Image (cartoon, rainbow, N blue to C red; front, side, top):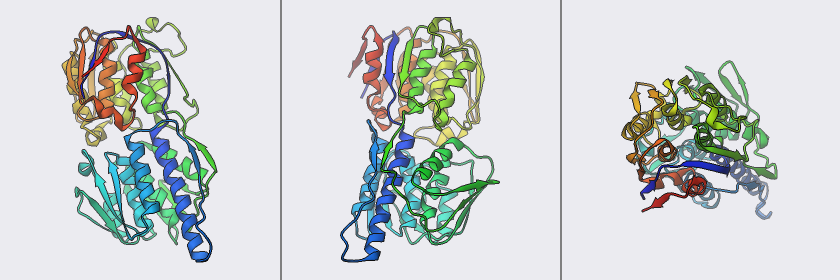
Length: 421
């Protein structure tokens, strides 16, 4: 699908969609509470009927990634045969979270992967699962299979590859019959996402201790449903509107965000202040933006849209420690460079980041989403800086995290000026 966006400013209010990151974690914990209830009931007596441990999750929105996790969890709960098929779509969180969980449950699972997901790395999680009783397909296989019983013990992970590896083990290891430890080496990347996992585990009464780069996970823990759980607003996707608001001339407010959220991308507010945007100033026209330096270690998902802000800011913005973006849905450093270069920005790609010389109007043009939701949305926001229309090829990529994004953008336009082909 192509989307054509004509030049124009954005005005209005947007209600934040539910947090994809928190939704993944909530649905996984709720499913494990239910699976354990069924397992324990079956062990206690064959006469007792199926007893569930249900959780009512308030999540007033969805996306392809959330639906992938729900579909996989439904399969784990309802497919009683030894082998289960798990359709992950393009969701790295779904795949990397559920892989060790399948091992902990002793299920033979076949993961169906789409897009770049088969190419994204599994090491060192892969090697640790093999050391602890699991047999798996070679990395890159699709479908990707796992079988065998995950065993407890000492796990060693380089914390600089993916926080999703750590989260997956934190979900799985409490289910095992002996204590386990996860020893982290290197520097921790995206630690706020690990904190999100721990916070959700605590809601379901799972105890984890973290000290001196070691997670201590007690044995035989039971996921206990809190009854009702509400998924909070998504800071990662709200960042597109907050960043648009920071660009002079736009006036956008976002409701439904928790200012005390553990979501790491809440940092967008502080970064925008560093650029010179004061969110408490009702007249964004007075906010003159200037280049800054950004450490992307804990906020990799913000880099594409912050790059658009940087293109509008006077002077040079340097983004560092973003090398992991090369293994996302696209090589996001290359994709952002391609996007903004086509639109007329002065941007240079480095090994682990970007250098952007901003402050001049962009021209417009035809750009690719690179099949990446965050690139597509960044292009749509960059259009407010352009003198000519922006045509986004493959705009349907937004369905991965924010299916209603272009509807919201059209609603904010002054005047209404978007067409779809």
